[in-house]
Image (tube, rainbow, N blue to C red):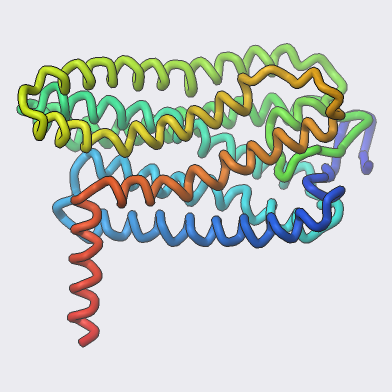
Length: 319
């Protein structure tokens, strides 16, 4: 460990899967492939939404933000993860670690709030279809998206600044692939009660409140759909929000599995437990952004039609 004084850390060491070199090679190829699919899938989805004027609606505006968030979120961590797989013990400077943690936390928190805003959009669209164009005007949905970004950034600034003030006196080894905030807090050699309280407040704002908004919105959505007399009408109404609901289940399901599950009382060592949690975090950080464009394109006729139109026009231009 390198220090300039008793409380100032100059670098961290990311352990990752250094104890399992064969797995490192397998995961390097797998994560690289998934990252390329994330860039391709979300990039194509953003291009289609911008290209097709029929998709210039609040729903697809939020979806465009979600795809851009997924690209930013994975790009803030995946390059470091890939580098970690190629290095036995990856060394990261203290400042570099804090920057990466800030970006990842900000993007993750923003996505939580944005999913709540998307649920409100679906609530208005299903429960008040005639008033939807009036309620969800540009001066409504743009501040909703901007508020999501602002909430995530402010929350990340607070959590990162508090973490930076902690002393790290004895141990600089992080049992993770990236500089994840909970893994960082485990290394502090001082009272972290303020950080814990701050994280609890953060969870309330960016996890619990958006989840409550989503839950309440879908209670009203389901109630409204059940009142529709025709089966075809019910199917069409549910299809407009099924993709968002699927993304929410995957996103929040993985988060709660990561942070709400009880600690194992088996003979598994603490280091192995940390590696298992890191692998779950890796799944959350890479798998979910890769699935989002697939879910929205496969379950959405408008997106599929826009993709076909864009491809056919490009082919005709090429001819």
